[in-house]
Image (cartoon, rainbow, N blue to C red; front, side, top):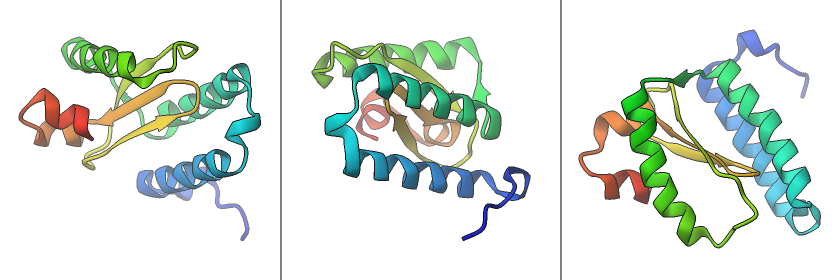
Length: 122
């Protein structure tokens, strides 16, 4: 498969490739990746998410997601993670996580959800 220039990819295609990449990492090598390496990989992919999808920076939405995320992080059992919560500027109803603690919900999920538990469940 030949590489496709990023400018020719839709947001959905970029997300699909990212999920495929991360799934491969999770399936093949998570047991051998140090927390520092996990953070490095996640940081690189987080910059790509910001560049290709974009982030919603409305303070009230970000604070809302951070409040939900902080409660979820307590149950994650990963005290070695410095969690980063964000709102991806995508109309699809979805949420996704990257290695190292980056977690995103989409603006489409926020538009459709009626309660915090609906967001947290996704």
